[in-house]
Amino acid sequence: MESFQDLSFVIPARDEGATIAGLVAAILTKFSGAEVIVVNDGSEDSTGELAEIAGARVLTHQRSLGNGAAIKSGARAASNPTLVFMDADGQHSPDDALLLVRRYREGWDMVVGARAGRRAQSSSLRWLGNAFYNRYASILTGQSISDLTSGFRVVSRSKFMEVLHLLPNGFSYPTTSTIALIRLGYSVDFSNVTVKPAEKGSHIRLFTDGVRFFVIIFKVTILFSPFKALIPVSMASIFLGLILYLETYFTGVARFTNGMAMLLSSGVFTFAVALLAEQMTMLLYTDRNR
Image (tube, rainbow, N blue to C red):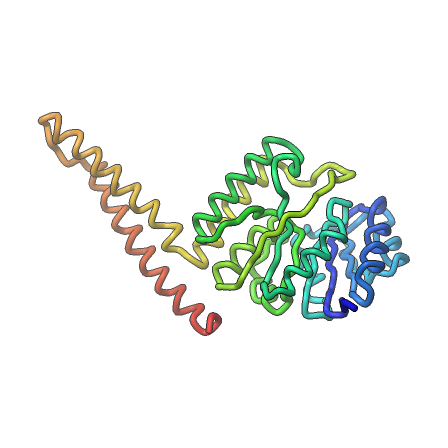
């Protein structure tokens, strides 16, 4: 018989009274012996009370600190070596959680539940945005990433705790943790899951949080692989400077302007910074990757 005593489910919840009790009950039924932690993130309804009645261990933030802060509280409090993160709004199925757990037990360090196709997203615009983030992050990390922003995942607690200090308190903890674990050399898998429409609207603001996700991807990549992030900037600057010079050369009035000099020198300077930062990063994480 399959054992689930090594699992700690961490569920951040804010005003999810309509769904939380049913989710907790379904998890405890399917995963006998598992720990279920609901982090009540400043709810103004009965989320905490209903989760506790259903059998969850409830941690309460007196005011809302954000999804990422709730995840960090739950991860710190977890008693078991394997963490399962799920949303409280009814989008994630315990049946899919079982599939992710079994995939994780094949030897992965983290398994992410990936939403497959346009229908799994709340809108076509959001699907396009996520497709861009996935592609951009795949290029920067060197690994194919099919769902960068999914909060449905199973991960080794010890490895997740290594990057806990990097996680923001807002809605982008999946982005940061995914890129960080990949860049640290841990094995990350993406398995397709079925995501139901949330009973409430999404808390994520498309444009504001979209820009924030992009910045976070870039910041985390700078932290773990600065060469990949900065070399395109360096090459673009040098290339543009050369193009401007060649344009004057072939028109018969070759001249080297201050603008060209600035582009070329900034490109060379950025290359030098990228090289130095990459060496510092390698020294910083040498012991961790042994």
